Image 1 (cartoon, one colour):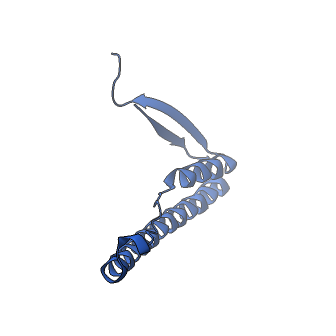
Image 2: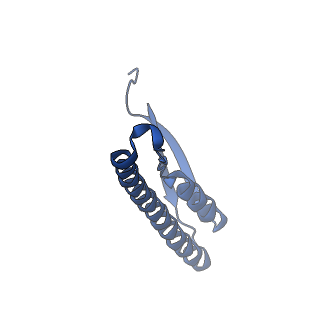
Image 3: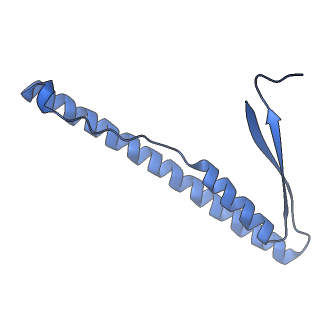
Length: 105
């Protein structure tokens, strides 16, 4: 099993540094949006579960429909957008794949 680790070299110009600050803000907003979508999905699933249980208790299992959603967190897209933003500001992003499990050492 592998993980991707990132190392960052900030741009040297004041403009580049200000640009990276905007990238940081965008990444935080993206991560917050991901968390909110996750919470909303989980809440919708709890409500759907309650509605299903109420339906079963009133109508029997054969007359009820289970409506579940897979709640996926897409934090990887936030990282990708951040890295692209960081590089467009003049910074350098280095990726390293690190073995975390099942390594042949």
